[in-house]
Every structure is written in structure tokens, then in C-alpha cells.
Amino acid sequence: MARVVHRVLVAVLAVCIGLSAVARGSEPAPLPTPQDGYFQTITRVVDGVWLIAQPQPFQVQPIGNVVVIEQSDGLVLIDGGGSPGAGRRIVELVRSVSGKPVKAVAITHWHGDHVLGLSAIVQAWPAAEIIATDITDAHLRGRSMKAYPKGAPDATLQAAFDQRLDGADGFVRDSLAKSDLSAREREGFEAAQRLFAQYRKDTRDVVLALPTRTFVDTLKLDDATRPVELRHFGRGNTDGDLVAWLPRQRVMATGDLLVAPIPFGFNAYPADWQRTLRAMQALRPAVWLPGHGAAMRGDAYVSRVIDLIGHTRGAVAPLVKQGVTLDEAKKRVDLSTDRARFVGDDPWLVRWFDRYWTQPFTDAAWREATGEPIEQGEG
Ligand SMILES: [Zn+2]
Image 1: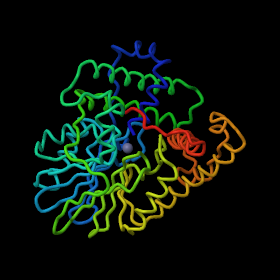
Image 2: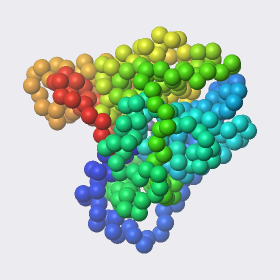
Image 3: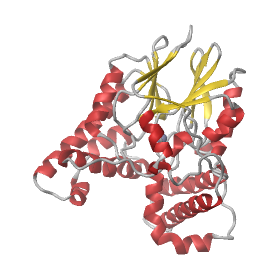
Image 4: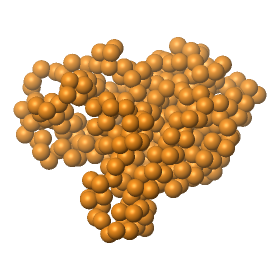
């Protein structure tokens, strides 16, 4: 989801340079409170499997979930956290449940909130493999993540990154200065200010650790008790999504193919995403571990996301036929019934449902209907 916030950052940079300059030298912003639910905690899912997740799953700058799987000769992690600071906290959480070393980290997709903690994890366990699909590996090494240094910190890239964070701070300050905010939205932006202050601390010396092993369709990590099948079912949230399936425990770790409470709809592949989720449902998982949000028993939420994708495609297709422009379509698409199923009438979440789903996914569905290519963005 790095892209999501970077869109926010890019959107605000142009207008906030003045605000950022004013902010320099002012008091450091306060850090997150326990009520913000920003710092990840670890919860046992089934015997030998744990989920590291944020207690309050909707965050403007989120940290991707991490799954911990104990095998006989070491631990397998699914995803690596969203910053070096988050990575260091993940190392401590992993050590709190098992004395075994991490032997492998499998990356579900290339977005920064799932990979930028890897550097801290491989520092703690230097022998750990980093596994990704060949498509995700290409994103990590290529244009999608060109803003991040590989191997060692880089002063120029760090300065550019910090400048984007100044833009995010400016965006939040600008939003708080508006007089028409509800109390709930004001609380939300104040919490966002605290989490960006923490994110700034956590992203000191940001470095991207790269995959050491890749696969195309399937890679099995065998074990007598908890074998793990890493699978690429097809495109969905990105073009290279990896999911982890534990056939014995019937646990499915999905990456951002499944995100609660608000799915992320940026540069996604609408029809493929529905097919991919249905292929995963066909395995009949007992427990679903999303990319953000708590563990889910049963697949009601999965079906809800499949329906949301279908309804969005269904709302966009007739507008394309009528020759309505994309900008006009973004104004006209009405997903309020679906939106209420996801976020009720909470004005803070309604705002972000529109920004993280309705707007970007209308774009994706529009491209799909018109045959325009859907390209992965920059991280
Ligand atoms: Zn994510």
C-alpha cells in the first residue's frame, strides 16, 4: 500500500511546500498513543501459527500484517513489515513466541508497507532467505521501487523520502485546518499526524532488502507438521501476488488480495482479482489471514470483496458504453450500498473508502473496460 500514501504525498507536495517550510524547527509531533492501535501485536492463530497485526487495522500509513509459521528447522514469515523500525519490533514479537531462527520470509507483493522492514529482519537472521514471485522480484529491483536504496542507506534517496513525508505532514495539517470536519474526522487526522511522526522515526536509514529466491507458480516449503505452499494464482491486487497456504491447518495468508476494513483498489486487475479469490475459496480455508486486519474464520468477507469488485465493474461498464469520461465516471459511480456494508456511516472511514477503493478501482475498472493497460505504480 505504499503507493496509496505516495499518491497522497504526490497530491499534496505541490501545494504544501510552503507549509512544510513553516513546519521545520517547530515542536516535534507527538507519537502514537495506545488508543491509536498503531503498533503491531502478535496473536496465536492455531498451534504454531501467529499473526502480527495492528490492533486498529485502518491506518492512513499502515503496516502490513506478518504471519509467523513454525516448522521443525526454523520459522517462515509471510511479509516483512513496513519500515526498518517496524521490522525491529517484528523481530522482538517473533522472539517472544519462539526461540527458533527465521529461515525464510515470503513477500506477498512489492508495496513498501510489506517489504521495508525486511532489512531489520535479515539483520537479526542473516541466513534467512527472502522469497518472492519472479514478477514481484522484478518490481522490487526495477522502476516500481526505484525511490529506495538497495543494500545500504543513501543520503540523496533518504532526503527525497523525507521530503515526501513533509508533504504528508502538510496534507494532514491542511486537512485539520478545515472548519467543516466532523469530530470523528478531526480525531482521525490527529491520529494520522501521530502515526506519520512515528513513521518518520521508523524510516531512518530506509533500505530495501531484495529477494534471494523466486518462483513462478508454486514453491513448497515442506515440513512434517506445517508444510507451506507458496502460490501465485494470477493477478489481483498486483500482477505478482503471492499467497501462502497451509494445507494441514487450512490457513490461507492472502497479502492485500484481502484487506479489512477497507480493501485497497490501486492499479488492480478487476476480473483477475475475482478469479484469484474464487480459486483461493475453492481450497476451503478455515482461517483467512488478510494483508491488513484481523484473522477471519469463514469466507463471508471474501465473498463480500468479490461482490464489491463485481458491483464496481458493473457500475463502470455502462458509463464506458455511454462514452462518459473517466473523471466524470469517478463522480457518478455510486457504491454507497456496498460502502455501508464495509464501513457503515463512520465519516472517517467513508472518506477513506472513497479514496482507497471507489476512486482508484473505478480507474482500474475503466481501464479494464476500455482495454487501456493497467500499470503498477511507483512505491
Ligand atoms: Zn498493504
